[in-house]
Image 1 (tube, helix red, strand yellow):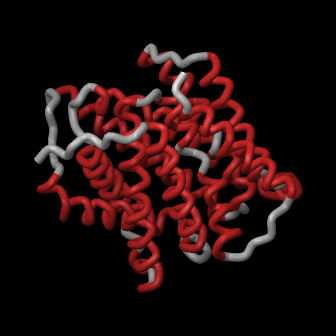
Image 2 (cartoon, helix red, strand yellow):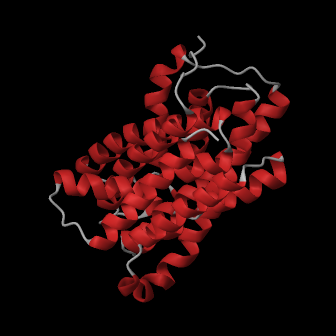
Length: 288
């Protein structure tokens, strides 16, 4: 069955993806308090694949030539396998305030790769606003007092994750925008390949996980599925770099959720940076 197109602004979908990304990032940090990235990577993706498999009769669809689709899906899966490994790795020994600014650099790589491989261009205004959003996220989330003590543990895995996530958007955009498959199908196949690869390389990690870990992984998996489906829907017709930029404003939502539900304090720096990011994001949404 073909899933009907979502008649919503692609930029709004990307921002909604960032909201669910904030929820998944918070849960990722809680899960990784006493286990490693290797322990959860395979189980994490196989649980999400299982959820998607239950729903797949309603959406599974491949329209493109398999000689093109299969290599691209494998490429996306391999790139995202390493991207997710380094993503989890960066949270193992470092504070979120150090990791998040580096992960926020992914859209910069996407702009470059989209120009090189897709011939995709954006207006100067969109580029400047997107750079402003990324700069605002870095200013908002960076804690320079902790930067030096965590840099050795964080720099390589976080930057590598950003680079790989930035590149992954390019073959994903190509598949989706050319109608070769829909977003849920891509996510399901990608998740299955990553999960099986992780278990073959790192093992299942089941012996290290408790019932509490599995519950958190399951809940986080639902948020991650929604996050990535929204991002893929946004990528289908949206500009790659702009979409990734808006999809990476997760720290702002982490802050807002903390203020609303955890009664966290509001500093002038965080408030100013959060408002700047939100205003710039709204300007990006505004049609040129």
